[in-house]
Image (cartoon, rainbow, N blue to C red; front, side):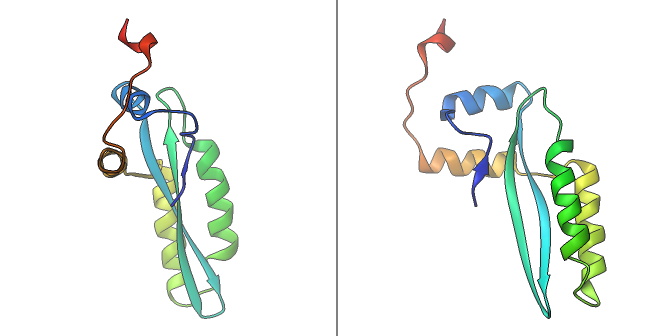
Length: 115
């Protein structure tokens, strides 16, 4: 999965932003094509003073338009995803940070943060 909103950030900067209140969230989507369902998720890095509304709105309309067609589970998936959209997404901060630390163990911090 691709992590959005982390372009140009080092692991040190991400850890610093998480300590200030940033988080990684996932907005679940279920897309149906006739009798098949595809569960998709996008990971977004939400900065400390940012809201999840602008990301949740896009996924709300996607779920509403494409997910309900799977009978009988479609409406259940839509309700479940709307619940997480209202809640602000699923918080996956610890999982993502553990994955980043395992895949990128060496980092050199920017000198401006050490002052």
